Image (cartoon, rainbow over all chains, first blue to last red; front, side):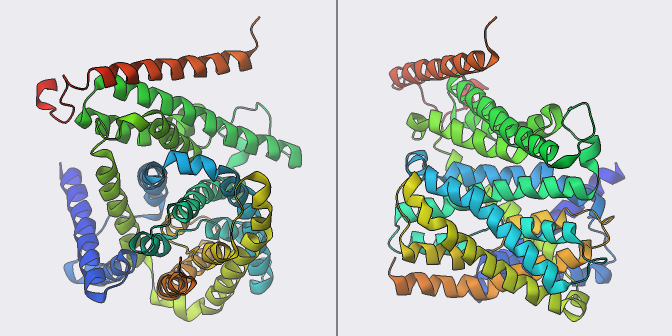
Length: 413
Length: 42
């Protein structure tokens, strides 16, 4: 019984910090994420005063992030996107989110590896992990600004769609590199029957992970749509959708052994596309529900970031942080400007001003923080990677977030 | 022996057909149902 009450108390403490964070954001007139980060730091500072334990441990953070927080965040971003506009921009989005993300992750990895230049303390795998984490973008400020202003639906869909798909690809990439780093690929979730070795086997493993996730997600999306149509009730539809978000992840990741994140994303897109005509009926409450769930989990992630961030990170790892910031911004810009010209071969062309928004507005936010929080502490370089990612996220919040809204204004988008 | 790929595609098409039919039925019954009132479902 004591365990349960402690868990409830810990949950309430975090939720209270999240609400305080939203209040701070309102007072400072800044993004909610920054407010929650400040609230997390304050909540952390108050812990010794209250002699209180949040119950957060490096071992349970990975489970919490991957099984609870990421499914909700990915499902809600996927649910928000209009399927019709998404299909029109699917070519450019996929181009940016696959080739673009791989290029971005590789350039970031090379830059941080040679920037840090400490092969024993910071090997290639650490650099690749950093690259994969920093490839996930979170254009929250840009999206908010576009919504307030001209509300250019096409640009909005491109920015949101690209962010959603590149989050999913970056998470798959991260899980893949982490699997190699912690040798779990060898015991793997995929039943190949033999030990994986060589580039061919890794490519096969990656393909099974990727396409298996897409297949499970499609199946879950179809079943979700059928069940909602059968139940014919707005309240029941919400229950089914929440179950679909967690269930599609669990089924893919734990039962089938393929990518859970891709499964969640495709499940949301397929079910929303199948239920297009029910938006005004059974799904009237769906959008607000996903909005508050997304807000809650985003706030919680930033509160946790505030709790685990330390002053030593800035005194000991400041150089690594600067290297990561330069690498992340440079790599994103290069990747977007290298890949975007090819968009016209697979869909509508991306104008130059939009390319600028995509590269400078590609902030690193909630997904990057969630991924880095899930790093196992057994990896000797986890603290360096965490400091680097926190540095980039802070820079994103403080500098990129504010300047990108000015950039949109200047470009008159 | 049916190719597994063909089976997947026919399954997918069948599911879409089911969804389409159910959506049409739901649309037809719209006047009778109050979908936001869940009390009657409890």
